[in-house]
Image (cartoon, rainbow, N blue to C red; front, top):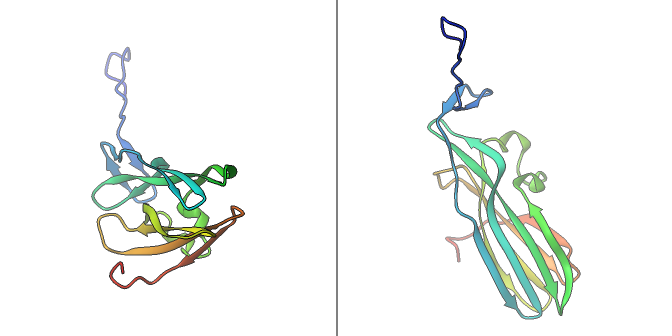
Amino acid sequence: MFNSDSTSFQVDTQFIHKERGHKFDSIIRSPPFLVDTVLHQFHLLYKMQDNDGVVVTDHYAIADRSIVLSVERAGKSLISNKEIRKQDFDSIIPREFFDKVQLHTGFIWEHNDENIVILINICVPDTDLCIPILLSIDSLGRFFAKEEMLNDME
């Protein structure tokens, strides 16, 4: 906005999410989380990190997250720095919910000589409304994802 002498102006630097009409001072960010482990013949390296997406609630804006994944098996690279986002699961999550949910967590659920399974939770922030997705990675580096109904985190 220009002041009366027209020699200076004020810039509003607040985050604005126009579709929902909310205005926030900042976006809540989370520190990255790194896992580097060997399971059977697999070497798994993944990092949970904020991405450029933002999920806006009625009270705040929070950064969406991604998993950056690298997998080796018996010394051979199967996957190198593959970014996994909630949009990769559009066959499971209806597209109209993408702006309401966050890729919240990802951790190793199962493993054996032939595959690794990562449990990914896509959640509405600050609720227990989540879609658990099991992402399997086989010995050739192929991905298979399915929604999973979990019984109290077995």
